[in-house]
Image (cartoon, rainbow, N blue to C red; front, side, top):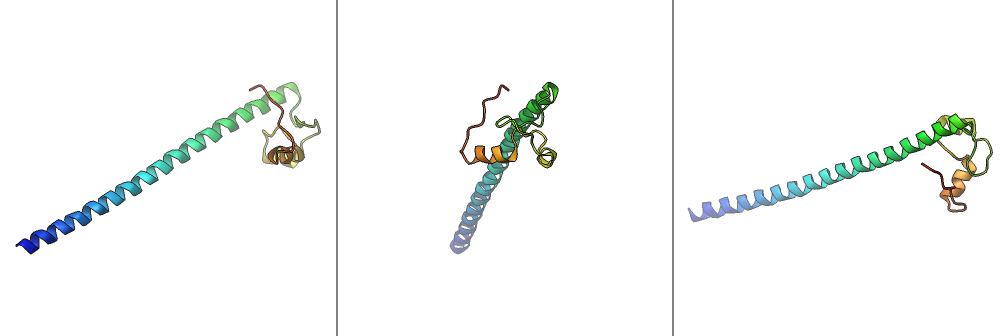
Length: 106
């Protein structure tokens, strides 16, 4: 009887550890999912802002001109990223920290 009680207690302990491990794993997955959704929402908001600015440039006639150097933005680049405010050369320089992006009103 004592042996059976001990085995039952050990099995219950194992189940408790397994449940706790699963809870931690579930918490990690839930945390990751929340972070992913937040990141997607944040980047989506930034992209929407860039699209609005591109529409403003379309209205004022400056769409397709690089905001940094004033040169035309390549058609393939505009096709790939229609909201881009920079030509490929200036975008690369901005990303590499060689030049600063001009401050734009949102």
